[in-house]
Picture 1 (spheres, rainbow, N blue to C red):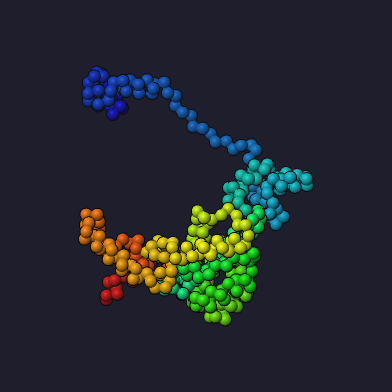
Picture 2: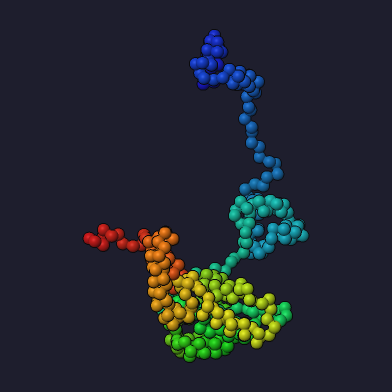
Length: 344
């Protein structure tokens, strides 16, 4: 429109009429005309190659030297100094980094060990005494640098702590004694899951579980999510208001763990099991209590219907789980057969 405004005024049309025809303000047209009159046509710049730029052959030589067997484990600054001591100058340290960056070799250029992919453990329990998870956590002793080891095993379905021992050190033999006491009291599970600590992978533990036909399961290295029930238990333990800054003795630590286990099993309400106690679920008392809760809610709904906004007889938070998973398989709709094909 500005071009049309200029063309009209150049042909003798008044600026007022040109503005009416093109809807371009006179001030805008005047400013644009003055700017174009004073502007100097730009001269295309000529790209010049810097006189100090390395040639393609020289840059390839720098990469070969830096990635050679002699210098592959060294930083460019060290390579630069070593070559200068030998009377060789390839380029500056900054240029070395620039060339490495262009070749995507600024990161560690050494030959790295490739660890095999670990199998993702997938465990499910549909009732108590099927899958036990255990781990060892450190309890701070009376002075800095002194710790006690708390061996704790939990049933992943009921969240019931089936055993907790506090020892002055960690060993496979103590782990065997710990498991033997638990199995004698609560029965032998189908699977025992743990991380890859030295006690968990010890030959003594492996032999005990093999003799009892118990499946051993281990977390992947450096993946704490593979042992969620034990990690959650330890967080409840250490973030509780009664957890001391330090334990005065191993006897103090054992007394505290005994009281914590009693509270965790018989008083603590777990959101993962319908706000029941672990003992109720472990010993089959949760289902009758769930029915009693439903009756209480039904009576309250009849008495005060306006206070209940949903038609569900019980909130979802009170539902008892049908199973407990460690790494539940991801549901993939693409892997399921088409319903039309199945019907055909």
